Length: 349
Image (cartoon, rainbow, N blue to C red):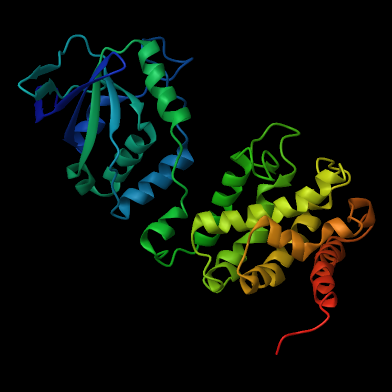
C-alpha cells in the first residue's frame, strides 16, 4: 500500500500560526496512515496522547457497526519526513505509508473504526473528514490537544430529545437527562448545588451528594409518564431550572441559619435527605407550582415556608434507618403546604 498515492481536493486554513488541510478520506486509507504517540512513552515531537481506553474503543466500535458515522474531523500530524505531502492548486497528495501521521484528535474513534472493519469490511469504504497538519512541534500539538480537550464541552446527551422531540425509545434518556442536570448544577457558580455533587473519580472530600444518588432519585421524573413531562416541562433548561430553584429556596433558609454548608447539619447532603427532598419535589411540589403557574424561587419559598419554622437538621434524623429518615424529610417539607392551606380564611366558589 506504500506505493499507492492518495489525492483529494482540500481546504487549506491557517489557525494560530499552524497551517492545516481539511479533506475527505476513505476510512481504510486513514487507519493505514495513522499511529498514536503517547506522552511520557514515545520520545518524539508531537507526542501528546493518552493511553487508549479499551472500554471506550468497544463502545465506539458498537456505535459504528450500528451504522453511525462521525461528522467531526480527525486531526492528524504528518511526521514521515521521507514521504512529503504535496499541496498544489487546492489538492493534497501523499503516499499511503503506514504510521506516517500522529493522531492528535480522534485516536479512540480511529481504533474503533479499525476494530469495526474487522467485523464489517464495508466500514473501510466509508468516508470521513480529516484535518492534516504537517510536522507539528510538541508545543503546537499540545496546544491543539488542550484546545479540544479542555476548552470544548460535550453537548449534553439528553439535549437530543429537545432537538428532535423524541428519544427514539432510548431507555437511557431519563438517566442521561438526570446526569446532564447534575453536570449543569454542579458546574454553574450560581447554582445552589455548585461543586456539591460528587462525580466518580473526584478528589477525596470533593462534593457532598453522590452522583448516583442524584441520578437515581431524579430519573423517574424524566420518564415518559414522569412528573416533568406530565406538567409540560420537557426541555433541559426548564427541568434544570425547576431543580435549581427548588434547592435555592431550601438553601436560602439554611444560609440564613448558617447551616447550609455544614455536612454534619444539612440533611439534604445525605442520601436519605436528598431522596426525601426529591420525592417531595416529584410527588407534590411540581404539581403545586404548576397549579400556581410559577416555578420561581419566590413561589417555591412561599410554598415551603421554611423561614417561619424550625429547620430540620441531620441530628433530628440520626439513628433512623434510611427509609424512615427519607419519609421524615418528605413530611417535613410537606408541612409547608399544609401551612399554606391552613392560612386560607376562605375559598372562592
